[in-house]
Length: 186
Image (cartoon, rainbow, N blue to C red):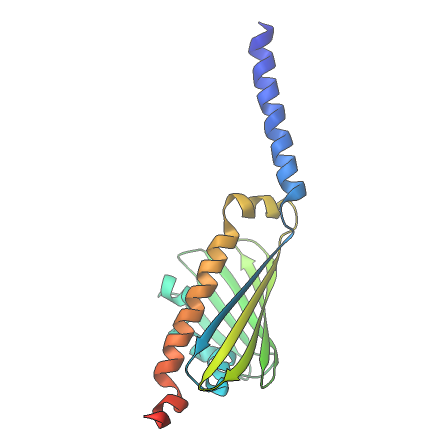
């Protein structure tokens, strides 16, 4: 009789300790750095990111949900402009704000409101090298407890890495097809 109670109690205790350990030791932040090379002028690449009205042609989220509802609020391409989205497929809602832009970098803050609330940061650095532009995208997402444990179990970092890299692939493809530098080179 004691074994009937003891074994489930031990299993439950081990489960609770495992969950607690995961919460205590899982990363409190996800940082993903991705780099790609684009055969285009730096200004062409930068403009395709800073002008939110161009997102629909390269955003991986638009690819995932063609019915994505979006709107741009403010002067597109300037700090303070907001890109609002509502994603029916993922039931998500939020907006991105262009925080800073220069000739060599830009910063975007992403405020997710649904299905959970968080604020993430994207930064992009641009460097021309010959006929190419090297883009380095840095994504930073805070993961407070217990979200950090859920993120590990759901493999969120892997999903975000794949999504960010898909976005850079689409950005590269679009920019290379529409770049002024390529048009004048041929």
